[in-house]
Image: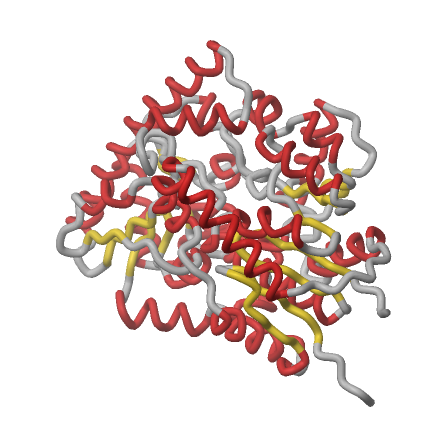
Length: 453
């Protein structure tokens, strides 16, 4: 029987991760991996029914310790990745809560974003298997992949015309359920003491003030730039309905699609402490930070170190007007502000480097013999039985389904096919060499079609 190499790629937030992880699955399949790609909550459940392989984690917080322990028990190789390891608002808080020593010690290897992230982990725990690899999402910001988004950018521009994009990140105050639920959810992820709870209470209040200031700014921009749409794009952890109450005329709230096409199609982007600031910077789009209630504890992250920051609305609007009237003035505006070398924070950022290749290089080192064959029918039956029982017994699970759907609504075979057709053109490879099979809800089995010579 032929040896099989299995790779499990879970996706937490579809809008954030799908494109990059689907392409990673594509490259891995071409190298002979049997890839299981899909919604993280589904993959985490079906792993016990599947042949052991390499599991690509999404964080090393306390919550994932139990999952990784089970995977190791099932003979999986676990690679840790922190999807939120680039942008944090408070260094002390990040080290304490995003880097769990017990979780770190369970995994086989960890992929750090770059030197800075590596040093943060090393400052808490000496761990031999940390590799400064970068992140596959940022690989897609390189010019080579821009054509992946060209059709979406054209569609957005045709529908909305010129627009200013406001990316929000107020999941503590404007939480999907409530600010109280935010702290309850945190307690499941990390261990919180009284000092921590006071810290998060202050964070919620800080976000309340900033949230209200952003809405005031959006209204002012709507009045001053009537020829532009002012588009608010909420973070997936937020309650979208809150913003809908403020829609009027050219002020709109839109929560659809991946963020990169929206950035590329915009006249400029506004944010507070979000990864989209770094993405816009890498894409060469005008990007501003608005910090109306500056607090070093919550506004000291990387986005506010590398892009122009404004604490007063008038100065920000003056500079937005400059960019709207002449985009060539962006270089002049940007030159007035201090900036850091992103290469200290993100590895493999040069065009000649490739994060997908770096990932696969490490996967190949971890590969091991596995002669078991994945049974799609068996997994479907066992998963559906498990979910039916869980839904029957767990009311809280049913109440969380709307929030889970907001983070990951659905995934279809057609979506993956569209991504693979584009990437096949870029790489000048045959799309038909990849087989995509639905495994179960929002989860797919991706492999290379073996042809007889």
